[in-house]
Image (cartoon, rainbow, N blue to C red; front, top):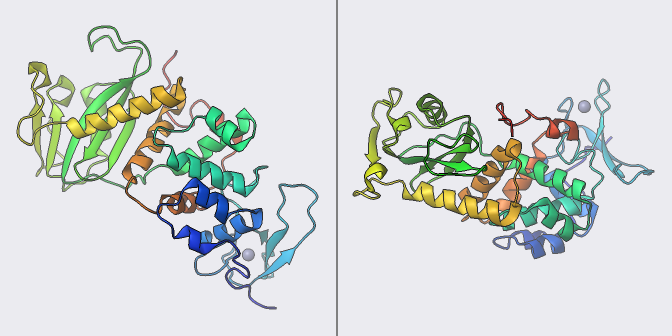
Length: 335
Ligand SMILES: [Zn+2]
């Protein structure tokens, strides 16, 4: 029995993938069939050659089967380890598994979403892909699932921190923000942005969210002079905490300001208002992740590849889990 090598027939046009950055049109050109998409996913998932996802064996053979239903793959691998014998494909156990949608549509949806600086609503996606709303909604959320930065990513250097409010109606003073959701923003100058949906704007809540996202070696922290930031950052001994006195209409004092994180907030808000009209608060963290994922990679040429390879490494997410009230946010305030 032979060992199945890497990609017997890589028949997508690999030269297109080198174009920078890859646009929707390139994705549409490069991936015209399900097989081309699958071959590409294979190289993403198994860059060193196909392995059985169950037992890890390298001894596998390629098989072709008749397909009765369109969501079953014709091209499969069979694990040759006698105690395993698992049949699998590059989509097995991934987010693409058990989808009725052709992989081309997935690829197009990913290209559309990474291209849309202001975000892409399910309604827009539905129109572009010619699928129904529920499919588009599910697709968008599953792509968003891949668009989160790793938990381990800690900010360092100079970090600006501020909070903003989403949803509800804002009337008057900041103390009347009961029906608004709080988003904490941390932006490393010249580095990544993190946006976090937090339960409230109390000092303890903000401190905890901040402390878990900063590197011990962080040098400078910039906030405004709101009471909630009146903490001593005991875990970060070497960090200097400077405050810009917004309460006294002071916005820049030398290097002390929170303007770059505020710019990110206003971009996010324009995107939310412009594209989503209404945004379900229970999914807020996902929209925040989607936004910062794109924002942090705005200079990257390979954002399509990065997104796809993350998706190829993510487990399947059943619809059931996706719609669970508490799947993303531990606190959902009554509306
Ligand atoms: Zn196996």
